[in-house]
Length: 72
Image (cartoon, rainbow, N blue to C red; front, side, top):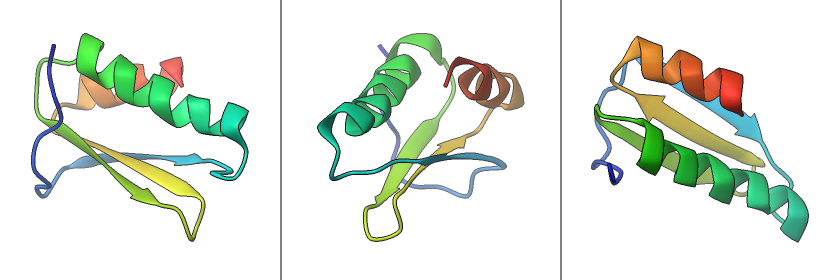
């Protein structure tokens, strides 16, 4: 399991638009975090901007960022 890193200057970022007031839609964020924990080997972290409805996922590795984008 690859837990999130502390924030760092990441070369790759994927944004997910999420309605955090909708429990079912917020499950997408939880599933995306779970995907990162189980499918990455390099550094990654996420930033949740609830007021903007965005969950940012930052990756050190381009291949992992691409696979995340395809999976989510």
